Amino acid sequence: MSTSNENTKKNEEEVKAKISTPEIAPAKTAPAKTNVPVQTNQKRVPGKNRKTGSKSEAKDSQDDAPEISEKVISINRITKVTKGGKKLSFSALVVVGDMKGNVGYSLSKAPEVATAIRKAIGSAKKNMQKIPMRGTTITHEIIGQCGGARVLLKPACEGTGVIASGPVRAVCDGAGIHNILTKCHRSNNPINVVKATIDGLTRLKINHAIK
Image (cartoon, rainbow, N blue to C red; front, side, top):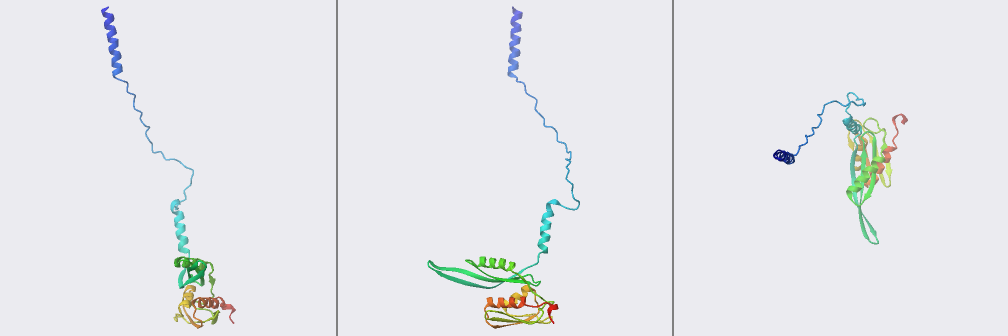
């Protein structure tokens, strides 16, 4: 009987020892990363960076674009009387040109001055006209007219400069004319003077058409 009691006590002690010390599971280790290059089927073009290729092309296109000069000739305030009261707006006369024989003008209206100028610049760029030139001056003498304004345009030799008033000078500078003699007759309205100048320049004949 004593041996059986001893065996039961040993069994109970072993069970208690197992319960008090739980088994700890072995920690899982992550697989080691190997620096193996991944092979792709894309072919790299030598001497070209794909990320900066589009940016460099955009910069080249901007550099190749011609420089356009923009000049505001006059800004007028316009008041329209309606049934509800007076409506205030502004008109802007703008002349633009690439200084290489192309020039245009526009008269736009808007409730704000900045908006009127922006609209006029956009419209003038769309309506640019080619001006016949002989070097840095015009091909021959001509008189442009619009309404009551008359503008005399005469070619000049090298070194003369632009002898003109404000509106006519803006048109000549935009077209790239550096030597010219001008004279405004009758009306001095800036809008009509600009239109008369453009009228005279667009009616110029090219060199081989002059006898």
